Length: 534
View 1 (tube, rainbow, N blue to C red):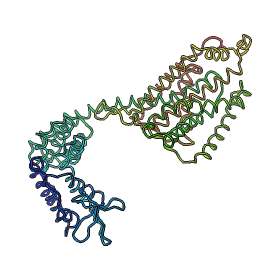
View 2 (spheres, rainbow, N blue to C red; view 1 turned 30 degrees about the horizontal axis):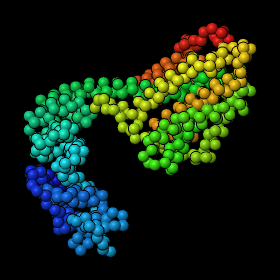
View 3 (cartoon, one colour; view 1 turned 90 degrees about the vertical axis):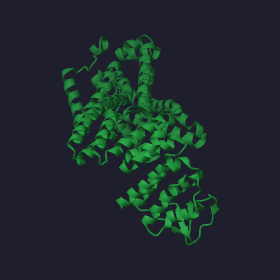
View 4 (cartoon, rainbow, N blue to C red; view 1 turned 120 degrees about the vertical axis):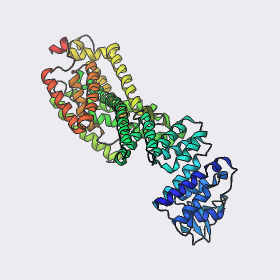
């Protein structure tokens, strides 16, 4: 089988010049039938080879090869048919045809599928579409074969697209690794060492296991060392970015708690469920956009979901404050028990309305993909957006607390409720607004979390403990401390995960917080003035 494939590849390479230079020839009915139903595998491979030797006029051969790969070909009476759903067509002309009742399905084994894929890649290298050539070159780079070297060299000499040329150069170097000439293998090692990508590291490691020449072995080890050092920087930067991303998520989740717990003294165990409500509000907005608005407007759903998530969670928070929390101020343990029960009620309510299974929230097109900074470092757009969103929300909250009338009332009631009431502050209304604000911020956290994970009834439970840790570590009632604690814990967790694993990293972070609170009970930033004395 290996000899057969090598012979087929060599024949294909020898015909590349014709494929690129000669006028097109149409696929014939005899060729189509032989490619699908020749007597044995060797005959089918030979038929595919013969068809691929000629330039593809009108793209009929490429379309037929794709149909073969998709198992969409049937044969009957010496003719081949392409079947899509209930419709059949002639692979030669593309015209509609009637599928005979006795038509047989064409079966491709794994070897034939590899031959078909290679034929598709070879045809694509002569395509006028740069993306098609890029995909074909990537396939050759991922599946190096020394027999393809003449093919790659010929295409590389006439290729003008920089991306395709880079992939072909990598494919050429990877293919040279399998050469019988030690000098060529040494040249390939030197070329791959310059690329410094995870793919080249894998290729070099694979070659090192089979390499017998001492000089080439030494070159491979040196190249692996250089590649590993370069990739290590990508891993370090990736860990820092992941830490900042996690820290921004923790910051969003903890900001609302910094108000309800840090400023108001309410131990709100339903905070995680308020996060969940924001996520489900985002899901509902997405569903409304998909059902009632044009598809072209779907990517704008997130712009509407942000205020919707805030308002939904704030409304629930306002109801909780008026119905339960306002009777429990000054009794933190009772607020803990009451809000824990409320959290169970909210979870069960969501299960009854939406089901116990997770629901999917799709990223808008402008949040899909990422920025590739290094070969092994890509920064996803959705994570970048969450970091920016967290900073924007932080700035808005800081301005609200420090520069607005509501913020002044909240700070006054927090520091001295009786005196604030004496000077005319409506403390009950201020409590309502402050708790609704904290709940709304939790809703914003849920909206952001919906873009990076599944949305389900248990979503908030994954963040409630971490949110309390962030608020306590940063200093109760201190927004600046919340920022430092969230980002610090995020980065520390991700750095430790690279060394110890996720479970041990979680334990280490928890132990660090326990020791820190033992040494500094007031957190990173301590309250000053009347609040501290109270």
